[in-house]
Length: 81
Image (cartoon, rainbow, N blue to C red; front, side, top):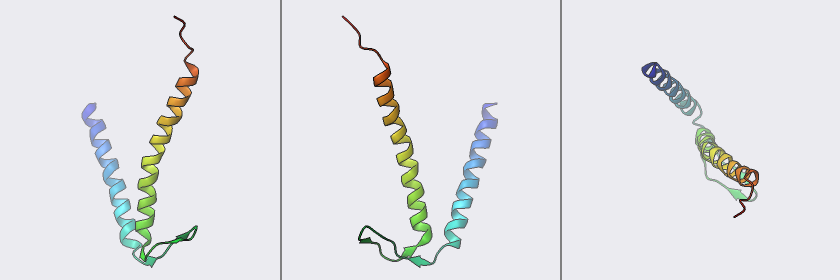
């Protein structure tokens, strides 16, 4: 059973990698983004999208841990000694 889970995980990761690779290869036209007065240089669309994906994948779990830590801290009653 453990081997089946590993194969399914590897296949899922392979599919994600292939989809991202296809997206990168199809979106090579250069664009420049501006936000709150900050302007980037010309880069492919896929660079911005993949960077947003990576930042979201890092921030999501981090915010979840912070929210869980805050929630646990409130729910544990103070011990009296």
